[in-house]
Length: 194
Image 1 (tube, rainbow, N blue to C red):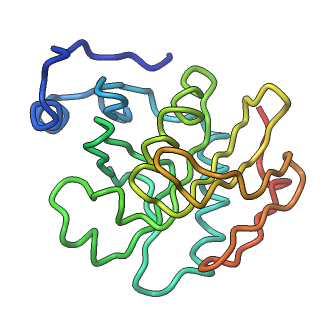
Image 2: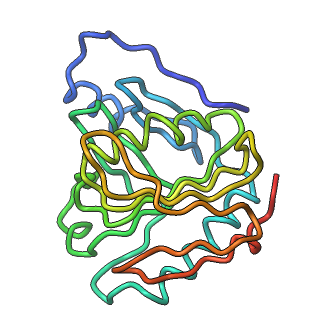
């Protein structure tokens, strides 16, 4: 099953979109995001997708400060881009999460990680990084299992407007370094391929 979109009035305000996102009864286990002003419902990720997220999450716990958390279901908002995203992994201060009602402002994030799915990889490659960069999230890790040149992990940083600079690229099987404040080496050889 691939992602589906929920039609909406193009004139809807951000507050109207968020209200719909919060109040609708969505299919259990699905991932519901607002991407470029469109509510998108995706099925639960495949097991290989989750294994990649788990491998990264496990490594992150070994390097983050005690007052930061690693989250897999936390929504972050980028109202200027009409976006409400649920990254595959989000690293943010725990204090920000304890003060939030439903979602965090994206600027609270220190790192977001997206692992592509075959049917909606474009969102992770184009829409989400533009929104994450515009929110000033310092680091974005894209694990692209479906990249045309073969599975890769790309670390982006130094956001300027809605654009990141690529900091490092690793084909699956190679090492990828996430710089300070993480100072973490990820072995992409631990990731299952498609």
